[in-house]
Length: 175
Length: 204
Image (cartoon, rainbow over all chains, first blue to last red; front, side, top):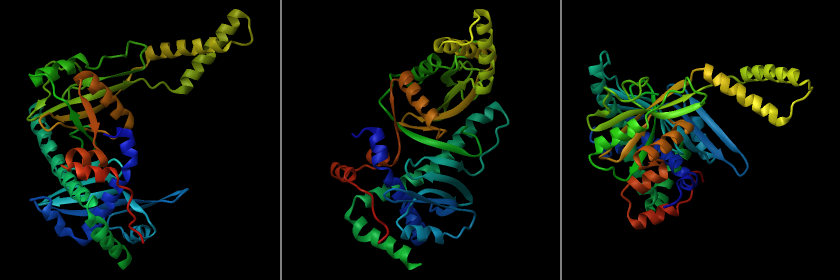
């Protein structure tokens, strides 16, 4: 097994590629999520997406912020060779909504907001509230994990170069 | 940042190894042994230890449970004394002036200045209370997974070292490569392909 620090730096591109692929899936194949979760959730880009274009000497960052922001600038950045390095996502399932930001290099989650869980008014409420919150976090984390596993299976297969990359290129140059 | 907060950050880990049975008693003993100690009346600048999720300011776990359903939930507390550098500078200047007056010298040697600075720091540390920072930990022992409610580098490093010291188990941080390697059920052949991957080019 590779040293953890070495593996982190050597393969952090995998997380960036995952987020870029996920954006492509969200825009072009929203039904894909049905294969990943029986709850048939929907996933949307939230209010922030950060892309990065690494040149030989310099690094260019593009941040798009705001609800219902126009993502054209992001597509343009993809055309210039950028990848998504951070993405805010909105997950909806039934009447519930989760919001969170994922960073590509670590897949760490921040700004994680779950559907409303019951209030904690007494010490007795604490156990139930903690278990409910853990369940709600797990719903979103499991979905992202399952999506990442699907991505990684595709990424190491011949389909990646032969099918997925051409489809992503078609998407970014079609607009 | 707390598990019950309206907005949280999570860093995920895989726990490697097994605890001595019975597990709950082993964890309880490890948490108590490494619970945080107060440093407000000591010259120490920093202390790190475990504390109860439901009662983080009274460590010791007396009357607190860390078993919540199938989860083990407790908190990492990092207490640090933050003494503003300008206060240190002020008291160092006062002490140096006193020393020069007593000795009748116009300058102090480098090691004398350092000794004064250490002395001032120790004195101020006794007077300034430590600021507590609490980060919740949710451990699913059966799944060997652990969530730490912070993305801060320093807090994560403290968690990793204290957890290894307390539980004698290793935490492996989950990031793209380790998630792929440890949780994606890849065959040996697929793992070899994974290890050879290089960045893709989306643009033509």
